[in-house]
Length: 378
Image (tube, rainbow, N blue to C red; front, side):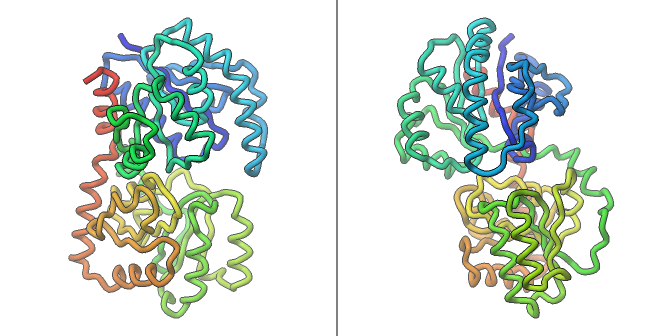
């Protein structure tokens, strides 16, 4: 029986990649019985996450890293540095002793890539791209010099795949497109029917995501501030958490939008909000592919999204499965919003059917099928 080890250390328990990792491991274990899957629990970051049939491998016995609270770019990079050096030798020892067939890496990938570059293991290395890849000089050079040590590179969108091939880092036969396992349809169908904690007096547009520059919520807040009369019968709900929360709240207060825009902290269940929303709005500056957009399609809620790289355009197409606008362009966004508000129910339903069909590529079953083909050498 083959052994697959999964590597995904993280310092933020709310990022979407973690759901992708857990869904991938669980679905592979559930649907494919010819392999055994293990999750490397580097410093205790996965302690509270329950896996039914997946064994965790505790890498670092000390749990002090888990309790550290690092905020900001420099502090988070310092924590990555600590994870890098404290986990290098323990991981090397495990790979030499256990000799798993594959090590599949998702986050903080530079350490295992460097380790494979300097060592010869019996294990094959698979790099799973998480999010839109930002190719700084260090990452570009690392991937380039270690490309022969990487068996496959799995991309969540075709656009990302084509981007990497254009950069000439990896050979074409190494780079594969496999959509993230975003959807557990049975679970979502139950969660979407739960009652909302708050009763909203007006129909609401919904935006979900971390309060960061990437999600570009400030763009939405400013647009609503400039178009109060135009949107007087609709509110905006933004769900998430992050470093820009106080900035959002200050803008809303200064512009006297308290009765128009509501900030809600991170919710374990966002599907009931999606189900009750008039429309999902994604204003992101980059996504890959944009989990909440796929989830919105699954529950049957219309989507308005920016055309940012690299997932939304691929998912929505030329407005076939939703309404798309030029990223960070208020005029383009207003045009997309107008199209949505004036579209007939027949036209919107046609887009919903297309989006739902597209979302089937992002189910756990589909992902396990594609991933198992790679692991079995098919």
